Image (cartoon, rainbow, N blue to C red):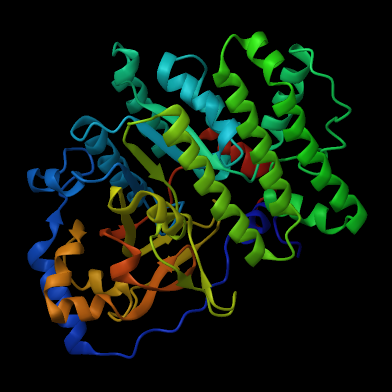
Length: 447
């Protein structure tokens, strides 16, 4: 029986991490669990405001990384949406950066700023539609649009993507802009490998690149260098054509995203590719903060393993430690960068929507998620930073241990990985929109 295409799609995006837990120490886990029970900020509803005592938690942060252990969890999305609304309404955050292709997310920015376009159509046209084209994200983005309506430009929330895995759209825009500005170039979509990027699925693009000769790979690398050089040399014409230096800077960024994406696809393996991706996303976030939103506070919505502040291990997948984007951001931003990780206790998914039937049982109290499940509260937020002053609790947090990451475990040191953690007792599958369901069905149904 042939594996449905959409299950292959999800499988390609989920790394099989196999971690090893810290040695069991029931007393140490119990001390941590008791401390969390006393300090947790209880969230009674995803629809209301955060409790008042949470207001002071974010005061020093310019950038908040909002993580999730699963992209496809309804409850984690709803809790993150609650945090996002708080950060925007109460804390004054005005920049939202999604784990999505930078050029593809620009239509979302246009929508939340002006209301132009059909939100459901825009979500379905994202490179990461299989992650974000859900009813939960429709609700959040519509809320941002409603918040912006009637506000002065400088008080509106702006929306960006930070990923480099689907650069073709931006590269095509560069070629069009060069032509409009009268800047000559011998480069075309084929010379830049855009035919290899058809479909915007980076695992598929990677596979196509893997079939190329070394000569062709080298040629593509040179062509992207030439593209950036052409933009730089055509600066005067580009600025004159657009009447601003902003368009020139943006074209340079799109060219750099194309170059980084080409490097990702040309990587020898997923480890090297992961390094390229994390560094590329870091570069885009810092560019947004410097060029687009100077002085503004930003929310980054992404997986735990992107926003985390310290290395993690993935035994069985990679040797040594992997360095996430969040670690690189902290090196640049210091204490202005704050991370909230996502955890959950248990859950189940139905068989008829990717990734298919899943049963998430409770895990050991030696695992971060398992310890938080033992607290006995349904949904809560816990600030881990004060624990550093309590030796027994700090000791538990400073031991290398597992946490859930998609359908696997990553191995990390909690105290340096996250500043805060939210917990939801039980997860269900987020609800794909009708357009997303039709796309899944076009990729094949499970038998």
